[in-house]
Image (cartoon, rainbow, N blue to C red; front, top):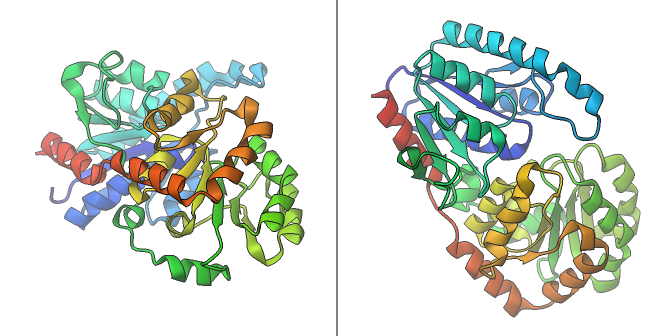
Length: 365
């Protein structure tokens, strides 16, 4: 693998960025002289997160279909043509040995152009139900690495490799001490702790529901760490006065592995990477799938766990009545927590990044 160049495209949300970084770090662990270039969408969070992790990133002028504002979709054909031209320029200049896509708008143009230029290509599909971009690319790419079985109805069988989802190395290895995490947040290790996270961008509906029930935490003596997402933080931060010293409200948690380790119960969206991290640590969780995603894939992800008694599932349309009813029952039921956690842990596919990089190595020999 000496002196090889790797182009990795993925972004839009942490669920696409974190696997991309995990893959890069595993390649780097094997060969410190490898060179990397990340490609994302020019106005999305990868433009900050990738440089913060120490890698170079280039942005494409690309966006997805906007259901909320149809007028914005008029520019999509122009953006697509421009991003294809950008992709040609990037690939001809950087000359990667392989192109790896972990999802997001920018993966489509760069992988499609790479296939035209006969550059080996790999898709990493995180979900149990693939998005339209990866379905379109399936016939073009060299390998398709998946986290769930039975995806032959979407992808060519001969290209599929079941690897699991690459997750952050610190979560994979479980390096955190629970007592130290509690101490760092000034919390009581003998009292239950709930972590609320609506994905890297936050969830309006989860935040609204937690805000409406914020006094429940003080009334029950339950501690809270709550990631709101940057868009919703200003609206939610006033709840800190109600929580007092039993809770922390953050726009973004940079130490997600630590707080996941410490939490007794996690309330979360059902993005594929979030679920993979829950499984790696074996956590009791209440999943609230986002209904605003392609093919309702978050619900399918959540059902893959709830059908095996590895998580509780609350649909967003029932959240006002069911979320805190489920939380109230689970947070004080240690036996149920243990059952969910053990079943969740059984669903973990360890060392996904290593398996995926083995496949990449085969393509670049």
